[in-house]
Length: 306
Image (tube, rainbow, N blue to C red):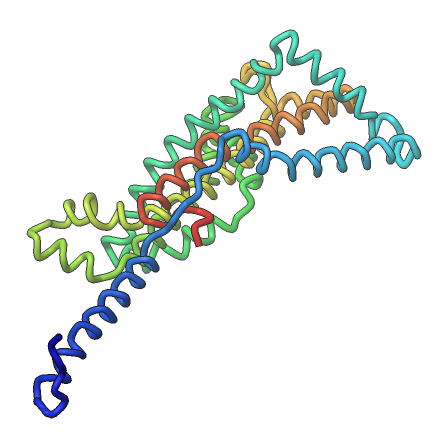
């Protein structure tokens, strides 16, 4: 058996080198473990139930409070109808298809106006980022427009375009464009300058930097601006439909709500409110939530992986 002579100069080195290598490997493995995210994929039905239970409990509690207020006669029937009468009105509109017609009238206007707002708001945001003098002059005005209530534009839009769909689209654009432009501008302001310098070193010009570096890197802020822009556009649309009512415009959700008010039909008014609420939640769950999750996953920021 070989023996270790402690008097030899190299003896200590022969013993310490394997220990140092083991320590370095352990540290490296620990750092790799910190960078990796282990995501436990539960079944789809389990995720659905875990996400559906809290809203369902809140809805049941709200209905119970509503029924209690109706039973105690806190308000007259023409102000606070019973949940069953609202359900009857809602079921009747769904069964004869009028609910879907009304929803499509409003959501088609909202989608057209929002699509135009995305194009116009994105162009304005890029222009404000690219030209500092334009940002200094127009930026404060855009922020002021964002804080202006969109309902205040309805009388002006009717004055400009009359009782037409153009007036409704104008209100939607004025409500959504500032939020989208400011969201994109804020997202590009938060892009690290190192990415821009790397793009210039690789030979990208202004258009290439904007298309391949700045806009992809600013997607989280841009998505926040889009989400806020949709919220403003949907509110603007409802305000426009409530005020700008005409037989030429068709029956949207806002017109349905105003029609229920004119006829003193409280169940119809509550039904319109429920449909407006469901459309807002549906757009969030169907479009914005999956897009946000895809962006976060692409950046290693999977929701819940902390």
